[in-house]
Image 1 (cartoon, rainbow, N blue to C red):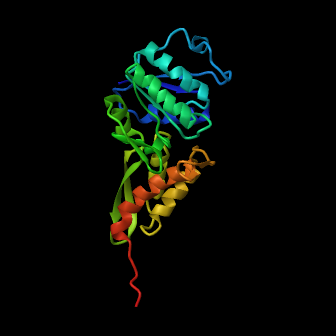
Image 2: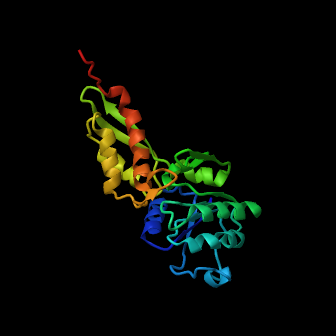
Length: 247
């Protein structure tokens, strides 16, 4: 799979570094550092695009300016991409209205587009836009990416006698690498404390999702993201949690 990853700040750089480090060897990953400044209205997108971009199957946009989203249809045409993943970990970088327009623009030219909010809500078939907005999609390139990066999935090995986490396998990492970081920190944790520890490790990584209240969740995207990994760990240790029956 040929991937073009776009960034213009530290948030995107972290994501790209993790993908490059842990991607399957069959993936070809090219990078475009997008401009960091855009006018309020982009009249001529070609003024902000390079003379050449490599051919790609999938475009990953980790940009920290909404102007990049306005360039994505042109980038898809230039690269021949069949799919676009545009992360929403901060609505200042990709507002919901623009994300809706982007999905429409790309659909009009036959390009699949997902805009997961937060990015770690992406699975091989769905992504979220809000607490009650689970969106299905069907695209082999996005699904292939989501096999390895997206909604964290950890497989815990429990020592039932000691009731501690004896080992953790990363089935699917968060794009930023947070799940892999949490997995390392969970080894040795007591089963009763593992879910809360996963949440603390997520916070200490640190997660770079927005700390402002998102109206479609009624919560911060950082907290929503933390709950994703906490819930995964909580489900894994649930059979080993001792409940005290009141007398």
